[in-house]
Length: 368
Image (cartoon, rainbow, N blue to C red):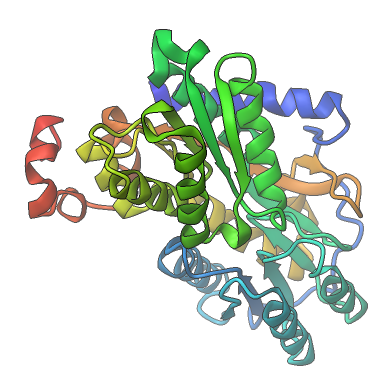
């Protein structure tokens, strides 16, 4: 039931964005459809980094397999990962344009610096779909999760965890990278839930989302605020949550405060099972990746009706207005719904989660 409730929460968020002229629930507008091609197509896939295991473990193989399925095993995916290096990603994009791929799926390291490459692809007649993060430049479409809702879900969960102590609780915010437009949306959503309800004593924008940078930021927060005074930590993703928890433990925390996360990585799910991490945000990578593959194939094959059906939302970037988009809803992941989320969707098995180290914790919450 919680999963359904959170998914439904995306609806008012979309309405709110529509009122601001950012998202509109009406489809249409693929006026820049590329010339029709057959099944023998090449999809270029550019993913941003390897700190988060999702990209190699889920996104790439799901997109690769879906493209094959949609093209009767004739289409292929050429994949490159920039390992958090924006200049390297620009080179990778340029190479794919030179190699004349038919369509590009780009998850930018730096949304602004990728714009010249997007323009270069456009000039070469190659459609560009921004994947997971909104790239600047003349992109043809965008698919991601409802990122402001992600922050709202995280902030709401942290307030709930603090309970009656929330109003006086001192909270540290560990936000994502300023080069990632998603991070700004996560932060805005979280602040909407936290401001006026808790006392935000420290807030950091974590360079490149790197856990080691989050760890250093947390060490500074502990020195400034005092370990015993930190009642909760808003962490924008699971990689940083792990680093935050590691630093809290290293500082001698007898009891860990509630820490949020995002991405439902395996180690985060195990931390949730053991009680070290309070929650994560589960985003259905299969849903996002499969739809991205469908969008790419429909776009390059000129199937505008199918493309429009997949992009009924509209989103603005700093350089483009009313970009055809799909916003996928998200789910708050806690001890209570592990079975109904990541296990039900075959992201992990019980055996993956309940290794010997976590067996007793799993049994305690009925996960066996």
